[in-house]
Length: 452
Image (cartoon, rainbow, N blue to C red):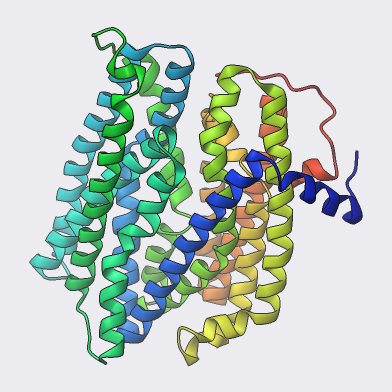
């Protein structure tokens, strides 16, 4: 049944009393705090650093972040899936094995990646900065793993709240003090404070996990540990490639802009993408809650509960997209001006990027529906295709149109993802997680095909 505006408000009134809605709003609140923390960081850094140094910071930060994703080897997503699957099936031995497997793989990959980034960084920066960037990669890898594990085992605030808010407190505090005192911070100091925040985040998450796991059957039932490498390695590889491709949406392209144009333009593009990603920040809030609930409902076979959850998330996504796009169209130039007078000239770049991110936000938890229910192969193909389109667009459009060409390539690839992941989720899981379900109800009954 199609939902019209007057029916939407009645639906929102009913949903506001539901547990799903309260959980979603709590998750959105955390992502809102996360977005504010990152906004403060970028605004203050853009004012404290000159254009060239800020551009170097954005390139190093983006490079270190995507290498942290590389080092995680897909374990941050796989552990959510395995935790819910083995917990629902009461298989504590395999659960213990999955935890050890994920941690060991993350540690090994983090060490190897850190060595590589150190030798790359010292070619153009100081040795001390190279060491700090390498340490950033190691700590960020563990933050990714333990944040996702904490979300599944403990709560969203412990998992994502500490990662996105607590971890940035030391750096944001130092940046604010430097701004008020009209002093400066070096790139080395910025990365050192990043690392201190990551260490604090890990300490808090591991403490919360230890307390929760002591009360979980994993600490009581059976005594052994079991491994299923044949079942774990293939999805690890697929999720690894998919997360690398996905992270290129916000990290790799900044590095490429620095290569094609200049570090200064990379800094401007970094700012514009961070603002446009406001849609994805809100969507991540919904999906953060969904990634904790979707696999549990899926593996328990509660299709009606899953459908109710997806409907609630679609309504919230539609509201955020409508309000958010209005804000950026009307006030986007002012928002850019917060970073400095020169940024306002790139309003058109921001709007093009917003069109792409709004489309991707409209898919809802389609990505989670695919990766957490055993359809990660399809998601991998989609992400690979989108990256090919984006990089081809960069090579074709940037030499002709400059930074607006990069924005057009970005938006085209995101809209491609939007269409393909929505169609794939509908056809493979029988559920439509996108806002499309509000106007085009799914014609087939919900039938899950895990791991098909």
